[in-house]
Length: 107
Image (tube, rainbow, N blue to C red; front, side, top):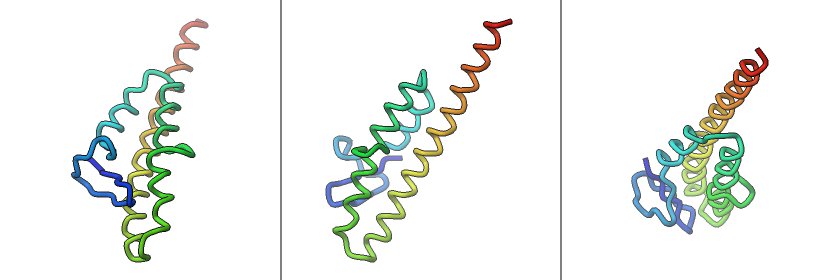
């Protein structure tokens, strides 16, 4: 699924503007395959950080008409929630793997 997060804050599912858009499936795949916590953190910052792609689009909502702002805000928040959930799940997996590795090294 591709969400195009264009300059004016529009979020269009299925749009193909890769340079301005965000390929949700690609990003989720990258999150799920993060090799370690540092790589996962870099992805989190790039997407959801203070100057992240999704955060920048949320900031642009203020310039939209109220009814458009509501619709676009819901779409962007759904995107943000999907990314956040994937980040949390992968972080838990990596932390469990680290604990298991430590326990096997100690025994």
